[in-house]
Image (cartoon, rainbow, N blue to C red; front, top):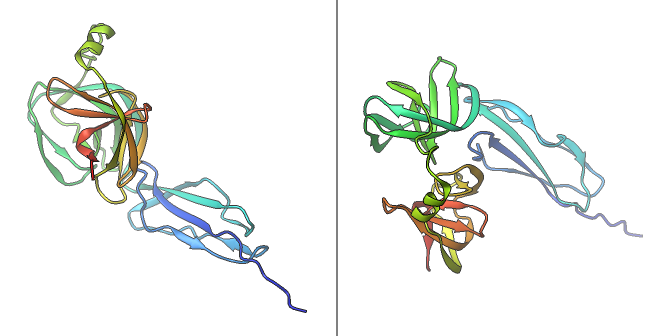
Amino acid sequence: MTESFQTGVPVWVYYIDIDTKANIQLPQLLRGLIGQHYTATQVKFDNFKFIKADSDYTGTFNDQPHTIRMYYRRKDWAEVEEVSHMFLKLSSPTMVYDMVNGLPRNTTYPAGMILRAFKRVATSNGKFWYEVGPDQWVEYHQMSISKNPYENQMPKSEEKELVVTPLDNMQGRIDYIPHKMIQVYDKPYGKIVNELEHDTTVTLTGKATNTDGVVWYQINQRGFVNGSYVKTGA
């Protein structure tokens, strides 16, 4: 008599930056026979500290898919706060960086400009950084907290300024940086509602262009992404 052994469904283990949703390293794949036990490893990273996991580290292989996500935060990030209703008024030309304590981008905002902030990070050395767009950060220096410059505008006038033209389910692809995410907003320059990873295939259902010529695409009628990060056509 021959005893048969059935392979269980593999278990994926992801190691994720809780703030950017990027993978810190390639996911691990655990394999085994149905009924065998598995244990996921909490990896230690030099520049990250462990925050939490969304599932138990141990379990038994079976015929059902299972995923373990372990979340980490950069060690020099002491505190993170969503601040989607905060605005910053710049007192001097301000350099934009790709991340907190990161590399400068080819963008400098002029003095007097008011920026909407979406996230605030307090670092371990006592500095504050504000996220003002996808991979766009400014250090809090020579600027002040400002009131919403658009709070007295009527919603109807804003809708007239930015018209969404329907698209017939055009196919597109997120064209950004491998293993990094872009943000999805409820409306152009609005509230962040989701994120999409580089190389994700999307269905475009609308297009809007503001007065500065910036294009926004509506994704499956569920939110908007900046057109700079969307590749259309073949």
